[in-house]
Image 1 (spheres, rainbow, N blue to C red):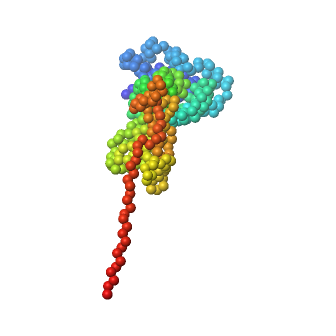
Image 2 (tube, rainbow, N blue to C red):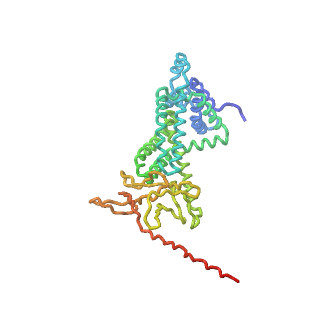
Image 3 (tube, helix red, strand yellow):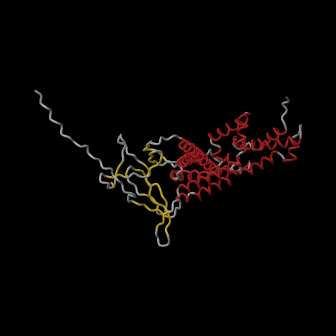
Length: 398
């Protein structure tokens, strides 16, 4: 095999020289992006193509490098040189805060999305408020200092160098190129996943309707920013957190689906009693005879209903289950806490007519009311004490 450099290698060597003032990791990424295009062009020109043929089609390597600078938002060679000569070595503190603020927020969003998806409950997403200040500080430092200092950090250079080495290896390179080819579809899938999350949460909790616009906006941002990340690295501060949220939510939803399937196919004895079972939403329930029990009513020996009864098992542990009540704003049945106090008010949902009268209609969430009265009369069986007999006196014997 001949060791003579190909036209592409010669052309890229001159492009690399023209970009020599940029960070090494940036140069490698730029060349990695344009190398497939040049290889296709060389194949089109035929075997033995010369550098002059590439120059005729693309222009000189120097002009081609200038176009790459402009499309990537990099400074001109003179501006970069002047900056290096006149500016002292910049501090790494602010770029590092910008970078690790992004990492922290992305990990946090992924974990919160996982928790919300596992429980099918949007309440864990309230924790997003804790990461808002961190994200705003990170974004402000990025916009003020630019993305170049962040990309020049040693940890970023190491990561990009490792990825570049991975591309050079045959097997890992094929895998990375395969994932790279899926990027356009990934951003569309992110948008669809965010919409699905919003609809599921809204069906589970009517109050989650306020979350849906934010998820729709995040989906639109993913579709817009994702394809532009390659040319504007600042958009990583949009794309990475959204991707982390979607990945965490997808893993959590998969776990919830597996758990639901396992519970649906598990065997339950007809006479079993589980004081700490959970329903398919993850809420604690009472189960008796394989069926869920929503309430427990206690009566005294005279058939009088008892109130404020607290249930415990044989080891003194409270039988704590989920308590529900009416959410007045939306007129729906909502989880309000957990305790072991019985009986609970009966929750009825229905509609109200023009006169304000309540008409029960299961399945329609128009109105809700709580009924504290016991809905039945209990017939307490009378326990008859066993009859007592006087033992006969023994007959005296002679």
